[in-house]
Length: 246
Image (cartoon, rainbow, N blue to C red):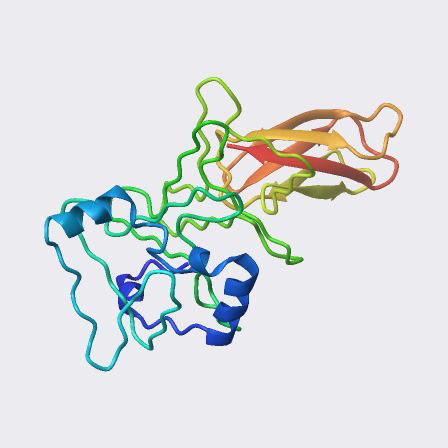
């Protein structure tokens, strides 16, 4: 996801045919921003005599319960409240739905941007989850976090006062902070390169193939690497699995 502000004004073409098919599958009202957002706020605006800005002469108006299409962007702005509110009370539907019909990479179903807060913020109340992610494409992720800060950033941060900050059901993979190294036969030590590692890092190592009288005496962290030391010279190459924590 790009962090460039100009994405907010970039045209977002959509497949009209795809929108019609999704409307038939999920219900037309679930796909129209503002269809379920009437609520008390909109009613109050109408009573107060507030009017929406008219669409350009060449564009049709946005109507509740109808499919609206344009080649440009539709912007709703507020200086003192939420720019746009979507509500639903029907199981299986969403207050706001964002759909991306682009057949190539580079666009988003929902895009959020902020200067000081959260680009996207979710709260789970009464048994719900704050933010959910789902993917049914092999090789892709349900939730994808990228940190591009020069230093000190975090791609995904989990905090919990009384529960679990991270709970994984299934295997866990750490691509650059874990691996397997081979200690050559007849050699007691081996140096393993680990990008970003420091002398304060914690190293865990375990022998993958038992050899009588040979065990790990130490795994000493260093800058960009750590050093394995065995209790004795292995009679043949020895596989050692390792894992580094900060």
